[in-house]
Length: 510
Ligand SMILES: [Ca+2]
Ligand SMILES: [Ca+2]
Picture 1 (tube, rainbow, N blue to C red):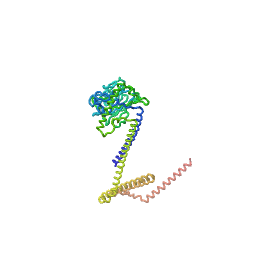
Picture 2: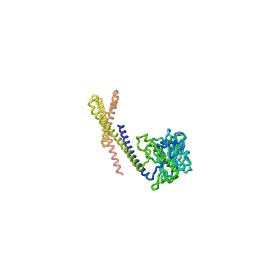
Picture 3: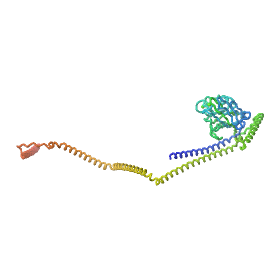
Picture 4: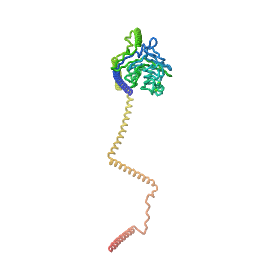
């Protein structure tokens, strides 16, 4: 029964937790909607020349369109492996062109995986004036001008704060303090374990109105928009033009550092005109880019056709999946939020059903037990009688004994109570009686002692009698004795009278 109650309690706790979860989901949906609304404020444009994403990431010649890769980086169809999990590897990928956006947002999806409990060294996302193609800072050049967001796996300074994320700004003169994990140079940081997660880790880095914000999805959910706040740097001045890049390095310990996508968006403040890139790019470059774009487009179309031939069942165009309008996104977020709420409520319902079921089972079990006991008496009378009667008799005896004890104690109580009520009379009588009894007893003792003495002295009879009077002298008879006494008395009285007369006569002279 206790176990049942405990289970019931646990179920109730689970239900409460689920309710809390549902409310949380509701809150998150609201927050997501609010974020969507906030993100709608600047104009946001996807910049394909500063982005990469599978599934047809690498071209036939092994390069990634619009991106340059260096070191140990290996591009493949669906990701770029910046370093493999081998010792002392360095690799990086950089945009081929300088961006000219005043403000921007990048969404990077990556995985850091390794068999060790600790990995190294980490991964860095860059926006710098020059490409840092080769160097010691997570596989990229030191003394950069711009900003680096470092996902530092290895705890060089032993402060137990890694894996962590730090934002380090540099004007092109600072040497990175690798031994202290850049702790003195960090503009902002947060502690996040981004290694070996079930889903790819997502980082959303926004530079808007001189504020750099880093949001992270820690790879626990596949939800693209489930970001947590990590770090914020205000009044940050970055070069007006720069390269986006991502780099990684391994040391004595090694992780695979894989980048699945790097999406760049240009942000324009509301009211400001969206700059037309065509006007700012030289004609020659423009033609080249156009050619590159067409080539890429053709490749893409070809791949799409191939894909559709290979998978005739699949409808639609998978490559268009990540283009969506703001309203579409909001609708989707609301829909997903509602879906989650629906799921949570369903789960709650299930839990409640379980609790009810358990209660019903419990009640029926109790009823059965009672019924069984009621019906059991006539069926097993012969078996039960002896045992039960014995038990009953014993119990009754026990009860009687208890009652007697109680009665005696009650009597004592009563006496005490009455004694307390009439302290003078009752106690006095009691004491007096006691006293008399004592006296009586003492008398008895005295009597016994006397008898004992008498019995002991029985043999010597003579001693107990008074001694014999000595024989009167023959010269004096009893008569003579009395006469003598009478004469003496008369004489004495005469003398007394004479003396009193003498004293009275003497008083007359004074
Ligand atoms: Ca480190
Ligand atoms: Ca550290």
